[in-house]
Length: 575
Image (tube, rainbow, N blue to C red; front, side, top):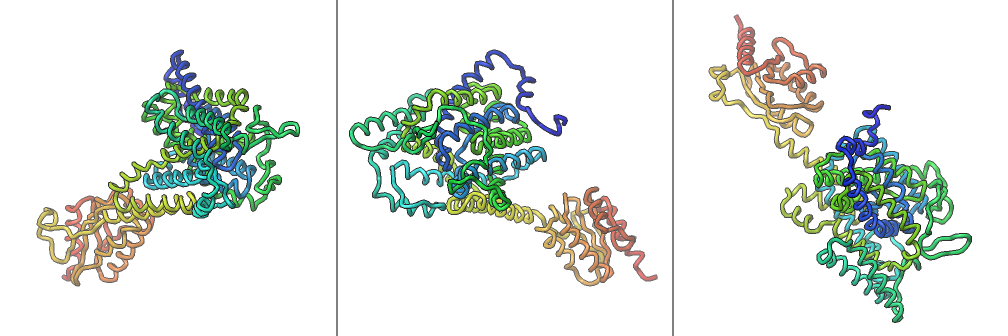
């Protein structure tokens, strides 16, 4: 298959065209090391947030990130688990277990590959900005609420699938607040907020987790219990339970052989596929949007240019392969990509190196991860949720945006928080499309031509009327614009319509124009269309709206329309 039909390795081809050097290699190694350190706790925290054991977040980076970097279309994107997926993936895990989550990820990978092969990369540009801002802000709010349990060390009297139910459970669980967990959370949050201002070169979350773990050990010494990752998660080796995450590589396994929500092996059936297909499409669409937005941000920081279709195929291959090794959904992460660029990355090798850092952490540091406090990880995700929701930017947009865009943004935000992102994006797109149609219809109008301002229309007899239509003639504007042509007094024999300012018309407009012609024939009125483009004339002819002497004519300009109108009038005068 040719490069044009299968856009693989686009980012690497771009690197080879630019040229690779030793300084570029040093930049990739340095950036990969930096981003790898950032990715380790985030990957574990995000896996926990979607209801999976923490090691599955690391497996995602280990498998998906280098494969996407190898096959994708952006030189700088860093892929892995992201906060945006939490609101989609958590309900899947709750309903279908880890096996269902991995199967849904695999299906989303296939959809992403199909999107790339169909050259759908540019279609993402048609997602309106208020829709994107609304659902990302809503996702940030949902993630923040989900972290309250671990931030305060609460014991909840049940589980919930909707945010409103979760809020009720949180309120009911407040009496179980843990002082130790709360202190660790406050300490971690303080470091996350203040450290970047003091020592920006050292990742704040690394310091926050380290100090949080040390504070947890100190509080345990004084009798205040703090929940840790090793207490919450464990793995089985040779029949023995060990705390934390396994210090070895994932093994190859079919995703559907892993347990479902009931703890039993997942049973693949048509009904299960039917239930997962909608979330899989949502994952694919969100992954495409996130990855391509991330690539645009990287392009703006570096002056490079990504290949959107190659990036979609790369993301699809990564999500197709990762579930076979326990990896959950992956997409490009804007914060990690920006850190990658700032750290001196030059090529996709940085993303591969960052996966190597995660590999070293699994093999060498896994026992230490058991001491990470759950409250510190929750604080890290709370900070991620704040950055993701961009409250200041949302407030600014609400102040300056048109009312229609404000409605779209708030609708997407509220629906994401109260229901789910799939519904929010669907309704948001419908609202945005409706507003666009309304605005476009307002640009189309029909007005009588002023004969005193048109040399070609001077001294025209009263039996001739002249109109001008400006703007696109489509289903939202056609009936209103063409209905004006029916409003004239008896005695009119010819109507001239200047359509030189009509760039396009659709089938609704053609049908409406055909109705006007039918009325004109019954009344003995001829129609002359002036200034129509070749495309408009071709559309009319294909639809059967053919010129007919004495009834319908196409002319280039108003001067020719005048000549045609006078000749037809002369032919109709009784001798």
